[in-house]
Image (cartoon, rainbow, N blue to C red; front, side, top):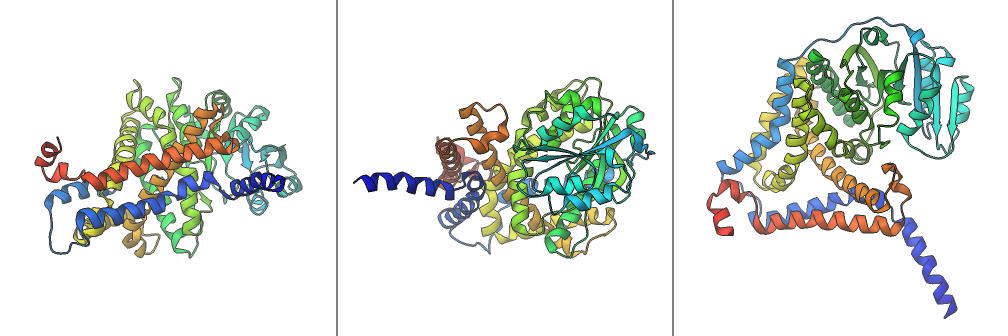
Length: 471
């Protein structure tokens, strides 16, 4: 009996070690979504429908799926110009937060040293388990080694007080300047932050080609429109130029969360009363994107998109702020209403797209036409097949945002239950708390989807009598 009693806890510990709930919270949404689509298609649509075309459904599908394309068209029509400026490298210190970057940090430092002196480069080695620190020290740059993994934001905050120059260039460990101008003159003129045109390093991988077009649109089209009023909403985490004073101010304001850390930093900057605006320079830098669909999914679900929901409060502050430029106010409204809120309708309407193929055809053609305009605007840098596949890439984005929402809720529940000071510390929460959070999230999402299978909310739009019959 004694042997059985001692073996059982060990078995439980082994099972816990194998179950990574932090990852499962973002991947469980894939089978959940597949089951929902199949259940809705079988129960409410009864298989594929090829011989009917309900204009009521069309009124639901078209607006919620092509709104990004229409917004992109507006970005093109009202685009501003890049900000041209000179550089004074002596005024800049580079800060890189790096974790387990042994394979990539050397190349980045070699690239930086073509423009900066080693004493102007600070690398904060944050909780690395490989030889990152040794590689950094071999390049004779400043190395701050933090044994515990405290995250990118807190790693940057460790380095900021040691900076002796007025300006700071925050850089990811895989971003290459390739001789690009660091436009310090823009900060001299009073702007509070400077964004760069972040492009993808050339690759033949099809996933990389899609991202190349996505990045080019974001920096060379979308942010150019925001540039008119010095209202660039997001300085990419890959690279950004700030005043040391602003980064010091944010040490006590930024919550330290990695997801959306760059978005939060930029919006905190916009909320400052003395802010003179954020602009986009014409400098192009290059980053290394995920090279596979699996890596891309993980980047968006566990890194990028949870930050969108994490910054809801900041979006609201900008949307209703007294001195917020119209561009920022519109952008905040778009993200709250047409992304966060409308994604719910997009997910619920997904079976209609799949089981009524004609609706998908209409959406696809509309989307491709709008995307072709953006493609021409960025001078056709990628092959045209990228445009033809891009609507599916948009669908992939929706699926990743659904997974990211699950991850966001999972982390927030843990943070509340454990009363965490820093939200990224959810990783160290007890397994029981993680399990409870996971169950709450999965149960809630499953309930929402099952209710739509049972009642088909789209009938409220396509059949006015549906709401009356329900009550």
